[in-house]
Length: 230
Length: 217
Image (cartoon, rainbow over all chains, first blue to last red; front, side):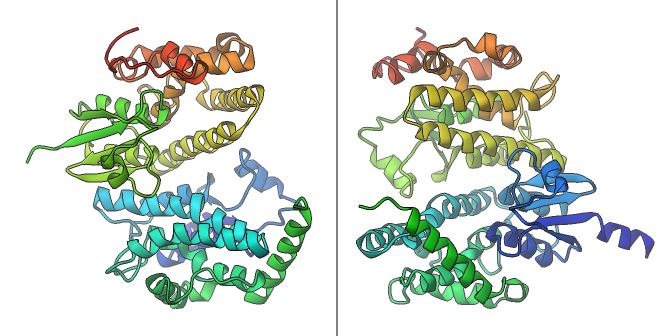
C-alpha cells in the first residue's frame, strides 16, 4: 500500500557494521517490527548527512524519523519505546523503569570501561583490571537473581543496553587472552549471555565474529603500543 | 497510604539540587537528609550500594539513584502537575539528549586538573546550551522543563567557574545569565539552590559550613 511503504522509508538508521551502540537500535527496531533503512557510515570519512543530523557529537548511531534526528543510543531507545508501543522494552512501573535505566547507565559508565581497560592491558596490569571489572559484574550477577533477563521474562531495555556483553565481550576475552565472566563465578550472567545471544532477532543480527576479532586485535595492538613504558 | 519520600543529598551537589527543584515544582513533601560524604551514612550505603553517591531518592522505602533517572521517575510518578518532559516523543528525545550532554561535559570538566581548563570546558558547554535555548524563555518553552532543572543547579557554582576562568559569566554569556535570572525568580529554584558564596567557600576555600540548609547567608 502506498501509505505503508511511505512509512517504511521514513525511518533511517545511521550506523557502522560493528558499533555496539548502533546494534542496540537494530535490536529495538526489529523487536518492535519497525521497518527502516540503514545507512552505513565510514567514521574516517563521515557523510555530510551524518554531520547534519548529529552536529554535536558527530557519531553513530543516529535515528532519523520523519526527517527529525535523534542521537545517543539510550536516548534513541527511549524514543523508539515511546513512538512504537508494541513489544514494550520498559515496564509500566516507574520504579522498574528507573532500575532498567540505572543498569543501562551502569553498563556504559562502569562495566564497559573496566572491561575495555583490562582488554587494553597485559600481565599484572591486566590481572588488576580484571579484578576491577569483576567487581562491577558482581552487581549484574546479583540483579539477575530469579530472572531470565534483566527485563524479567522478556528482553527489555537493560538487556539491549548490556547486550554487547553477550557476544562482543567474548571477542574481547579471546583477543586479550583473558577470562572475565567465568561460569563458576558468574553462573547467572553466563546463562544470560547464552540466552540473550541465542534469542530470535538478537542472534540474526550479530556482526561477523571473525571481522570483530580482526578489528579488535588491531585496536589492542595499537593501544598496547601507545602505552607509556612502565 | 501516604507517600513517604526521602532525599539523600549534599549541599553543594548540583545533582541533588535537581531533585529538590523537581520535588518543589510538583509540590511533593519530602524529608531531606544531608550526607557527610567523608562519612557516609549506613542508609546511603544501603540505598545506593553500587555507587554510594548522592542524590538518592527514596520513595516508600525503595531507592532511585542517578539524578536524571530520578528526575524522570519524579515526572512519571507525580504526573498531575508541572510536567518536566513534554509529551511529544521527539521533543522528549531532545530534552534527554541535552541533559545527557551536560552530564557528559560535567564528567569531562570534573576530570580536568587545571582550573583554567575546568573553566574552559564549562564555558564551552554554556555556549552550546545558549545556542540551544534560542529565544525561548526556558529550555522547556514557557515553563521550566527537564533541561532547565538539569542545568540551573550549576548556577550555584558560577562564582567558582568565574574565579577559575578569571572572567564574568554575564559578560561572556548574557543570554545564559538572563535565563538563570528567570529561573531564580521561581521559588522552586531559589529555595533549592545553595548560595553561591557557600559553594565557593566549599570548593575554593575547602570549607563546608555547619549551618543548617535553610539558613540564609
